[in-house]
Image 1 (tube, rainbow, N blue to C red):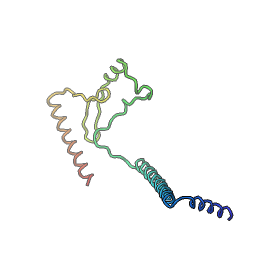
Image 2: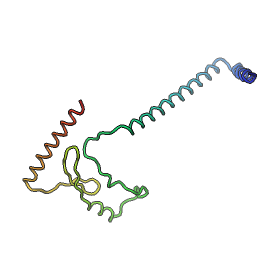
Image 3: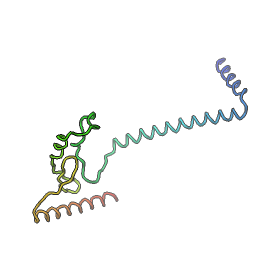
Image 4: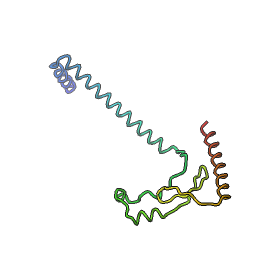
Length: 147
């Protein structure tokens, strides 16, 4: 009890020596500091909730999925230039990628360059017909999905 009385006496004594404008300034400063702390806590809480929401929510991606083959496995090599042999090896790899949403098949060279496939006229018509049907199905799916 004596400690509480002596501490309140000390604070009164401190404030007693200050002028009214200094007291007001000090009180405003304390309130501003408390408000800032409250705001910071609220932002941290929102960030934490947002992280939890993102991790639990399934993301729906539109368009072709990007293969992760060309992401560098060694982080130390990510900032240095490729040698000519590495570049040629990467460019020589040609993959057939199928877009799961639209059903389109594409030739991709190296790290993402899209190539044209040389086909006969009949095969070209067939590819266009299938691609158009797949595009229409994808459009219908997204149209009804968004409502």
